[in-house]
Image (tube, rainbow, N blue to C red):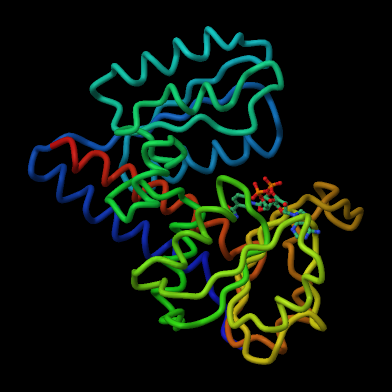
Length: 291
Ligand code: NAD
């Protein structure tokens, strides 16, 4: 069993990005600048945004955090987005999800200039991705592709089962894996909450990408020998033995699945750190495209 080490791979990637930024600065070009909008005080969202700001510092980007209270109106948020769209110094920005219930998420994502949409959530980028055109790829699927490529996991002609059809992970992942690309050319099955007899599919899978958000859902009896496992899930599970009162659990029952796996991502330290590194990569691309 080989661990797909997202912590190490993302650290390597950030070093590569930092080297590019150093070169950009030496050439007197503009420093990449990422902004993040955070609405409210959701614990996980605050952790993610802080990690993104820290990653910016590490690679040498400028960063701006637009921190808005929970009661911010949709109109005010749309104005903030417009400001970032019109600010020439900002190369890319993200609106941290989820948003408070009174705000229409779709409307907000549509307001982001696609050229600055480093999360790759705007319909223009989703459409371009689907049509094999250059686009910002959503960071989590992009990170999974990067991990598969760097570990030289063979995907061509393999059967990939994606569990989950969300717009940010499952759906784009299923599209990307079926495309003619390095980590691609796979035969893809997309499973979701209405799928019947899921085990019949997972037992046939060469690669399983679990993105459903149910802790330790995929167990050893559901996978075949030699499978590759990508565990996207991150759920806080109560754990009184931990100082913070919880532990992070993936969607895969690591103890029973890992002995049967050729490759597997751990949680934490697998897909999570890759997501942030790919956001940095997208920001660098956005900055380079502008100059
Ligand atoms: P989501 O809640 O939007 O979607 C979950 C999907 O799972 C749905 O499409 C649903 O149909 C499917 N599903 C639910 N129950 C199922 C079942 N019993 N069998 C088969 N399919 C089922 O979730 P999401 O936003 O895609 O996130 C999924 C998980 O990944 C969450 O734990 C989330 O925290 C995590 N996540 C991690 C990263 C990262 O960077 N590592 C990024 C995004 C999401």
